[in-house]
Length: 276
Length: 292
Image (cartoon, rainbow over all chains, first blue to last red; front, side, top):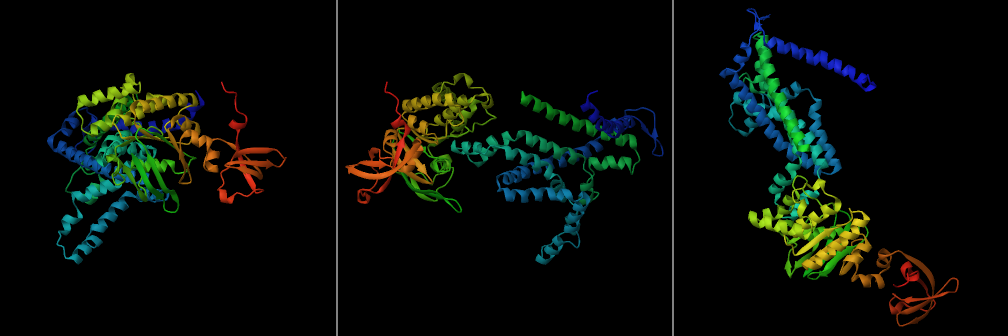
């Protein structure tokens, strides 16, 4: 055994024991049956999977997919603009921007989400401000809605988009923009025909980094959207906690993982073809 | 044809260009020569419209163009590092400007083929820029600019990224191309050899000022300023005493008693016999090679 392999051993061991094995258990459990009182009965069935494809659950999946997609698109648009501004700013200002992007990372997600709730909540500055201005509002609609969920999602996942894009923008050769200008291209044309094609890799990486966790996200929709929107993440948690249907929860998890892995594989494939 | 009137540029604290006046003729190969930081690239970028001057006017055939954005000026630029679009093939790079002008597909095809033939790059049409050598990239960059039929081609240190041998070769090519097309070229360079070899006229710049504008021969033989003399070729400075002046020819006695004669560049009302004077001597003139 080479020394290098020896150094890799702890990581490999850790990965096997704490990630691969548990995943294997999840896969095995997904083929089991729920016991009458919520336990696991070891009689094999595909029923969990067929149930996962029933219209109710498919609907929940589509809803989550939609939220993740919208989150990703919003993050993409904001991410491109922000990282563009960052990369072209003066070095000093750049540090400030970078801090502003990274700082929220240092705060716990739940605290951040509760902060948003406080802001829009009954005693919060938003409602107080609206009252002061005499603008009528529905306090219940204001505190828990889809827009708020999207806002929470975007603020949480934006750094995952901005950081790879910023890295790419920093390496981007801005004389290409000047060349395009010189050849007669307007701003939009430059953005779509010169800048974005050269950031393709970073755009895909950022989109994946945002899309994957947002598809499984359940804390933000739960806290900001109320119990109204059931999402795939909530669905899975509920199977394990409230419904005590571990096999079904496991099946849902496996399906989601397969989907996300397939997407990541697609991305790698695209990359590989691109490199050729 | 192209006139710069009192072009000035100052950044927040310092002045980059001071009242540049310049007139460039149709079909001329004009070089802006100077050390880095002298403002020559800034001037070129102002002409291209990539930077705006803080004062002055640019006229093309008597019409002001300094208020037009870069997109609308009938000038095209060859960038120092070529700035070829890496995600496009050579053909797509060249077609970029034509597509923006909404030419038909057939017309674009024909023009791209024509200009590729002109720079002798026909077989590279479908290659990506990162597979090209420096000289090939250079040709593509020139083709991409030329295909738009600009009134003036602007070249920013076009040969500086090439190795010595390639540079000499491309110099010849560039000059031949310019003469064949009869197009006005404005070329920025810090390489005096390049400027002397290529240009019809040279503008020597130093610290944001045009020191001298004249033909390569005049620049070489009768530099107007000490800077121009020293920049074009390394010179030695000798200090001595002025002993005789006849017309513009001065005789100087050096410390060891030896006499040298040379053209004098001091205004006549300041000339005094016996004054201390500096003589600049070019190696090429003193240790000249035997004529072939």
